[in-house]
Image 1: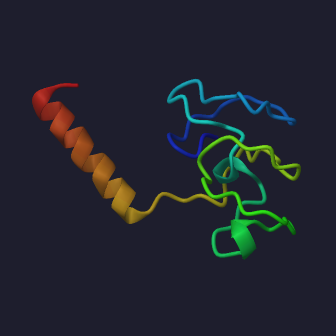
Image 2 (image 1 turned 90 degrees about the vertical axis):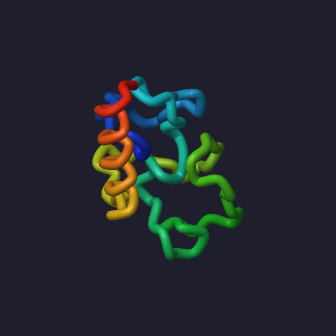
Length: 96
């Protein structure tokens, strides 16, 4: 499942560094799509990694990466839901 739009992308491990979401184009091999992604953990990862990956939304070369189909570590916040609702209301008024 894409960390950005929630699209269920059918991919298998290992995921290519160039793999992108079929709907929104977001990188799939990134921290936010990893089974080990855990905000608040050391470097936001449950694995014992030695090097910080600064941009969690961009493709990387992490050896521990495992694609997470359910994306349990990433939940949309209430603020992002409000922003999405506002965007949808705007688009319904003025068109896409």
